[in-house]
Image 1 (tube, one colour):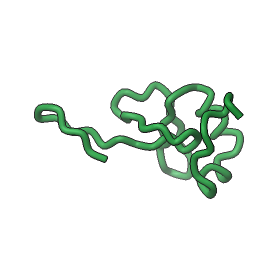
Image 2 (tube, one colour):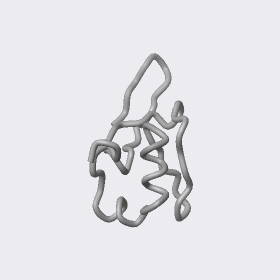
Image 3 (tube, helix red, strand yellow):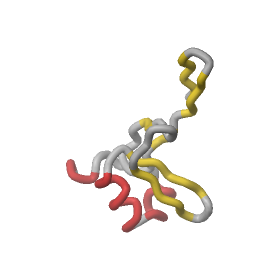
Length: 68
């Protein structure tokens, strides 16, 4: 998804844990896995992904980890 604000454009990324859209230019939480940067909405989502990255890459977002 592209969002245009003035002359700048930002492609939103999807948090692989909860499915929230994250602006990679403003993301505080990110990690590199298998040569790709993954962006997260919170430290909880980042920590959860780092525990089981293959699970989230195969199964997709599962919702916020603290709400399960």
